[in-house]
Image (cartoon, rainbow, N blue to C red; front, top):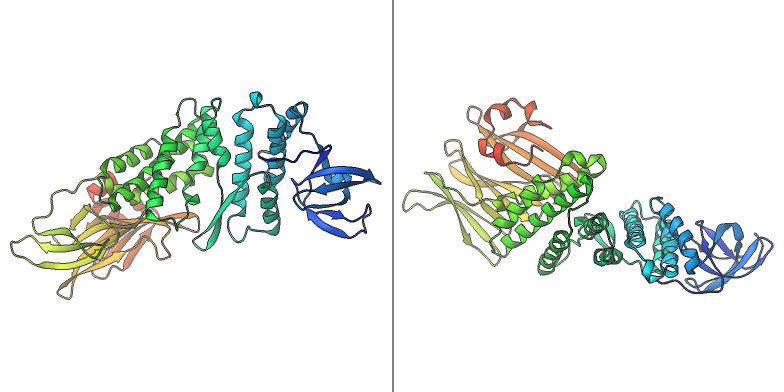
Length: 466
């Protein structure tokens, strides 16, 4: 954090403050200043201050009521901290708060520095980045505020995600909070949660770099003690750990490594979440973790015994591909049908439907996206249909087999998908012959067949009934 030293300093407290060529309202406007801009005061005349702005490298005059005096000596530190505490939760005043925070860091002696001001500045930087994310929110004022805080060493990263620009604080001060000897458990935990946000991972990150990042995220979260945490923060921590371990399990599967322990750890962390403690504001974090763990939940299972009549097998295809074939278990039988994928085919999920009417298999092409493959006969030949969680571009979601109704030849399935930041869940009855949806509801108890014909294994293991 850098703050220029001067004989007299002032801080701009209003957006769209005009810096003029002379001490009068009709003078030429030289530039526009914003909340948080720091100025050197060089004189005063007729209700105007003569100032110099180092960020703009320009001097001029502005009205004295648009700024406040700013001291950066040790004696000024308590007052600066009081203002910082006041602005910490004031939405829309992040640039001003960060500027006061920078002044406090300049004024406070090193022996008296605690984690509180670092955490406050970092929290405001994170909130500013969140406000700037998305095309609709990226106003000219926000762009100016980002420029103001950049002069104090606040750096942002930006990348495209699902058609909008995601802006994220780089987390430098959160890292410092983690390493400060006097930081409390709550401060460390909140810093760790900010440093491991899944929405601040660039989707264009290379596979090797993503794997390394997930290992680092896991290390950060493991280093946080749960002692003295509030119940809200403890549940948030477990939810984040669950999501990270699910990501690790998926990456391990992609590299052909044993991932059962990672998958089991993800489930265990999710079960430790007290969802009722999160409240409405934080419930989305739990649902996000639940969907991520659901997408990879078969990593915690090992393949069971295959059917007496039908079995799925996996063989290598082109580089990076796995080819899944359905075979009759009679000796000498040739594959009935085969399909290849670059995703993870979870053979532990393979299940024969009814009296060998079909075979279902969970396939995960992306970390947060799991499809359902349905092997079934049509026109005298076996085919493979792929059911995605949703119809839009992959974001987050899963779909799973939930049962079968023999009399009507209907599959029971459940889907949960994230669409434009909101999670949607549905329970459906599909006609096996053509996979057309016959009935659909937001809860399983609204569909009669779900009560009678749901699969016992699905009922026991699914996370969709949260």
